[in-house]
Length: 365
Ligand code: NAD
Ligand code: GLY
Image (cartoon, rainbow, N blue to C red):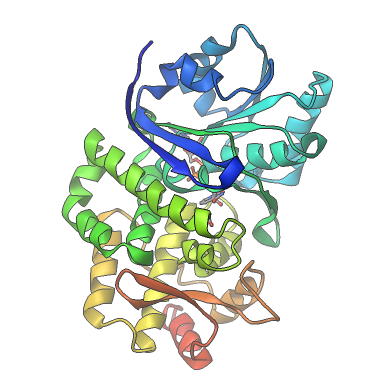
């Protein structure tokens, strides 16, 4: 069946460049999918929530392939080495060769795990991202970060490994829970705060329509977010420099996710609180005005997101958890802070007393 393809973007990585297709009903476009399958063997990885919704539509295009499916349990708490093994078990039981293509059908948890499995199986096989949450369409499916969690730290076991393509069918967002839509909006707002003030202002004007799932507004937000991310990834694939900006709110946010137990705070919720904490520290450094911080908080609140971390997390607990962060260098916690609205920087020369004041200010008194 023909699809209403609206946008194709490119992640420009030389010979490993790949397209991001964004549009309605792309799941029904057989040719779009099959042209990126390298051999005749396919393993679809999905979960117990997404399978009943979308698996049949994808599998219908693969009747001429040797196609198997692995259906994982649903939840951030299953993004672990143990559960990852279920993918390897199936690949080996089925005697899949190095020509197998893995398809990730689901949100960021499925995308990150499938990508990591693809990076490892026989030292690397191709994979395709079919993201079905807003968060995965605007962020996790693009850029090749793949990982599982360790009990002591988020995404600590992983690899950089790029997909063959990303197919983002924006109609899949219609079945998403409101809380998950909001979680994705946190990452969308992040792009505005990193380096795209005009997008932040567009979001301030259009947040109500996005929450009502206006399809044109959602498609625009997905495409703009993917373009902003693709630009940073093309410049710095392995996060030696500017790509770290994509971690705005993440050092604080990952500490919340780990500290509260994986799955209790959604990723975007942790990032929203983390961006408010980064804004608070940036204001203490004299880089943001009170009005800037109020605008950030207002937009996040309108998007249905938390604007403070869990009050029961102590400053000490934050410091311990933040020390297990991939941006730490020589024991120094580097943070993404805001020099102005829409102008983020990676910094290790912030005032440590100001960080302590930020952490303490959000604690239960
Ligand atoms: P998720 O994968 O857990 O999906 C959220 C929930 O929505 C799940 O219950 C899922 O089953 C359900 N779901 C998925 N698609 C649906 C649909 N169309 N309709 C109804 N329900 C649907 O979470 P997420 O927010 O998509 O991703 C979060 C994960 O992504 C975290 O593990 C985070 O660390 C990771 N992440 C990775 C990167 C990266 O660059 N690789 C970037 C950001 C986040
Ligand atoms: N989500 C952060 C990154 O992809 O770099």
